[in-house]
Image 1 (cartoon, helix red, strand yellow):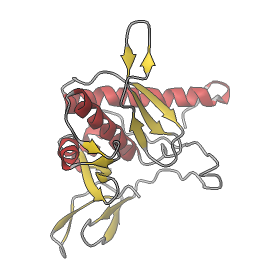
Image 2 (image 1 turned 90 degrees about the horizontal axis):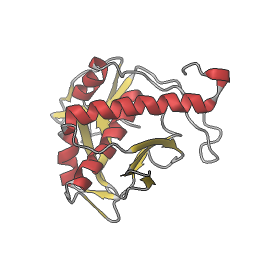
Image 3 (image 1 turned 30 degrees about the vertical axis):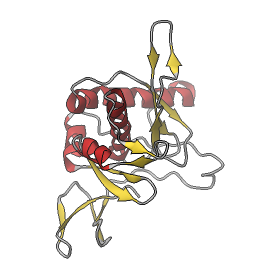
Image 4 (image 1 turned 30 degrees about the horizontal axis):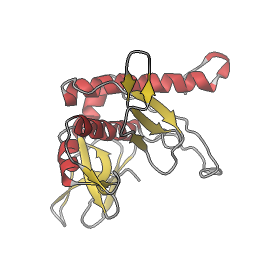
Length: 210
């Protein structure tokens, strides 16, 4: 946790938002040609999901209006590459919305193969889940390297505890990564970013977000 004036939580969260804003600008340049409009980035309670983007511009000023991208306050202490993976996931939604690309259904819950294609073109690995489609997100080795090369590999070591998560201990982010075969669910752990192939299935093993 970064030091803050008088131990103030608000200042800690302010620093975290600034980190996300820096990451947004970097990812917008690298993966979206700088075409995405700047949203309001927030860290608010959403214990049942890692993040979301609003479908309309819900923030307004005297001169403009803005979408909101939120990163879950309860889940923000995940390894930072997973947090950034969530951010790019939501940025991909924004890209599809402003370009009128149909990529979700069932009130935005179910993610189509169109979303998978757009997201995987931007450093993500997308896997399938029955109720939400092609939505399960993990960072690729390429994305992790981009994060490191641009000086944003900085874990957030605190998270909000709500009634839904009360009693759960906030774990300090670990450098250990769990790699899983999406076909047979065989898993291995590594202390650094590696490229692993499951020889039983001839399938690339990807970083688990669980």
